[in-house]
Length: 135
Figure (cartoon, rainbow, N blue to C red):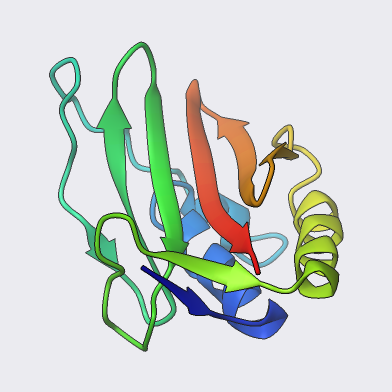
C-alpha cells in the first residue's frame, strides 16, 4: 500500500530521520555534536523503529549497518511494512537535487530502480537510505 507525499513532506522526513543516526549532519554550523555509536546488532537483526513527525526509520544489519527510513503516511504514524511515500516525478527530481546539495560531504547518491528511489549517504562506516516511490 502506498500514499502520496510532496517535496516538502519528503524533504522534512529526510531531515528528521537523518538526525536520528547522524545528528551532526543536522546541527548548525559551528556547533560540534558527535554522532551516537552505531548500535550493536546481530547479523540480520533490526533495531526498534524511530518515529519522527514526518518520517520513520530503524537500524538494520546484514553485511553492513544501515539506517533505513521513509515518509510517514500521516504525522507521527510510522508507515507499515511495504508502505511507501509516492512523489510525482518533478518532486522526486527536486528531492534528489536538494539531497545531493544538503549532504555533499557524506557521499550522497540516489539509487533508482524503476519507480523506487533510495536516497543514500554514508557516514562513520554505516549507510543511510531513505525510500520513496514515483507515482
